[in-house]
Image (cartoon, rainbow, N blue to C red; front, top):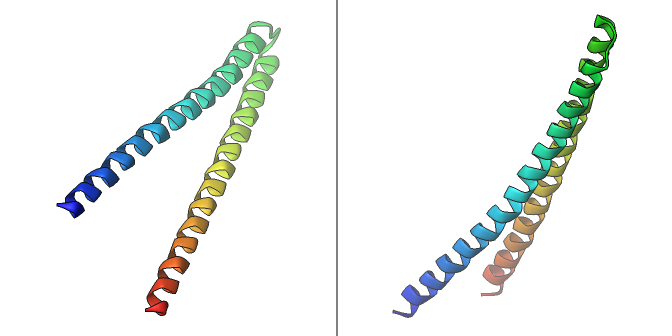
Length: 103
């Protein structure tokens, strides 16, 4: 009965954490989309003011470069996040190992 209560409590906390993580993730998604939209809006404006084909091609290249930069930033952020997760898992592993060795 106590273990069932503990399991239920753990599941509720996990669900709550999942919702909080989703809210944070959703905010990040919207921010990323807004950055991409701003880049595309900039290209539209650039193309609208282009006087010749070469000008429009430069607009496309500028957007492509800006989008690549955004993607590289996201990759770096994901990498940092994964490294933080690895660090936390290593810490937990060490704690479990210490408890196991002390028995």
